[in-house]
Length: 338
Image 1 (cartoon, rainbow, N blue to C red):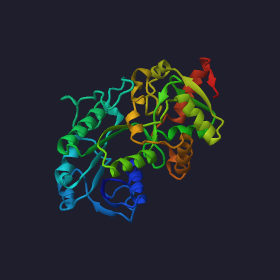
Image 2: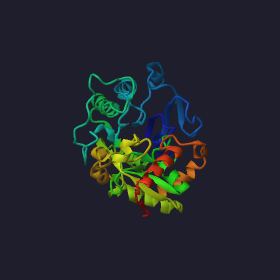
Image 3: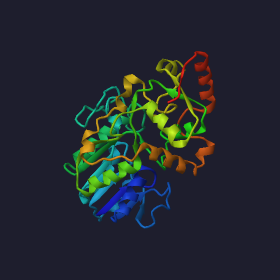
Image 4: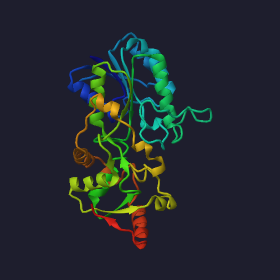
C-alpha cells in the first residue's frame, strides 16, 4: 500500500509509521520537521504545516491508498487537510478520543451519544471542556467530506515507550522509587490503558483490510482495577513500594487534580471514561501485550530520557506527595501492601 501519514514522529504516529515500514508498505510523512525530524530516513518526508493550505498544496497531484491522521484536534484541521487531498485518498483514518463521550456514562459504545460543540465553546483553543466536543466534531467533518471511506478510532489513555505526556509513565516511575506511594481513590475502581504499539498495529491491520466505521480503542480486554495495576508495577519492577490510599474526599479537599497529578484516576462519578465498551474492537482483532511488558519497557525507555532525573510532565510532585502522605498517616489510614 501507499500510505500518507500526517505527523508520525512523536508517539502513536511514530508507532504506526514503524508498523507500516515493518509491513513493507510505501510511506510518505507530511510534518513540520520540528519533532524527531531525523526519524525514518527510509520514508519520503514532505515538510509543511497541516494548518496552512499553501503547505498542503505540496501534496497536490499525488494519490494514496490510505491517509493516517493522528494530529487533528479541530474540525477545521480535518477540513483543511481533506480539501486538498481528500479526493486523492481511498481510506482515511482519524484518531479521535474516548473523551467524546460524557465522562459519567459507563460502558459507552460506538452508538452512544457524544458531547456536542456548543456556541459558547472555543473553536481555536483546547480546554478540558471542549476537547471531547472538538474531537467529535472533527470526526463528523471527516464523515461529511469522505463518506464511506473513514475509520474513526477513539483511544483511551495510550501508554508505552516514547509517550511525551508521562500520564502513564508516572506510575511505573514513582513505584520504582519505592517507599510510601500516594494512591488515589477507590482501590477496586477500574482503569483503562492501551500500549501504543498494540493500538498502532491493530489500526494498520484495519487499514490494510479497508475497514471503516467507529471503534473504541483502549484496553485491557478484562477490567483492571487501580490496585492491581499498581501492584503489577511493583512486582514488574522489583519495588518495595507501599501504597497509601487517599479517599476521593481527601483528594478533593486538598485539590489534587485527577488525571494530571494522579494519572489514570478519575473520580468515581466521572469514571465512565475508564469504562468504555471495547467489544467491537475485540471482534475486529484488537489484542494486547501483557501490561507487565508495557510497564518494564516504558521504564527501560524512560531511563534514557532527561525526564527520568529532571522531572516528569505529569504526576504529583514529590514534595506535595510527602505533605499529603504525612496528613494521611496522621489520620491513621491503612497501607495496602498487595
